[in-house]
Length: 145
Image (cartoon, rainbow, N blue to C red; front, side, top):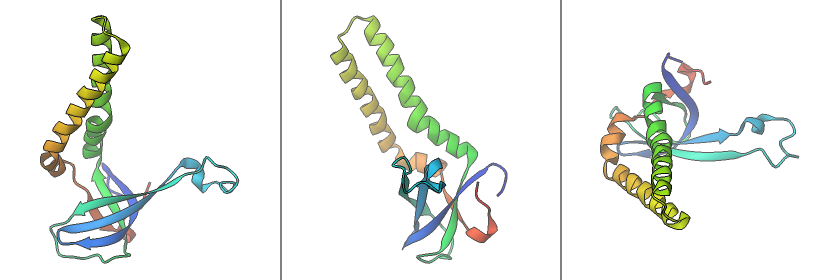
C-alpha cells in the first residue's frame, strides 16, 4: 500500500456507465473472534460505494478490488461529516443556553442548524465529490490494513 493511501477490500457489485458500485463488508473488531456465534456483540455491515472511473472498464461484477482514498481526503470527510456538526451542536447549545432559552427550544434550534448544514452540504455535493475521490486498484497490487 502506498504511503498516505487508505484502502479497503471490496467486491464490484455493479458496472455503471461512469464507474462502479463496490460493496465493502465492514466488520467490528470482534467479528473475527472464534466465539462470535455465541456473542451478540459481533457485527458485519455491507456498505456500497460508488466509484467514478474515467478510464476504460477494467473490472467486472464479482471482481475483488481495493477501494482507495488519500488520507488527506479521508480526514476532510471526517471533518465535514463529524467534526463540524459537533462544533455546531456545542456552539448552539452553549450560546442558546446562555441566552436562557428552554431546553426544548434549544434542542429544536440545534436540530434545525444541523439540518441546514447538511442541506448546504447536499447543495455542494458535486464540488465536495470532486475533492473527495475514491479510486480502485486490483486487489493483488495492494495489501490492506
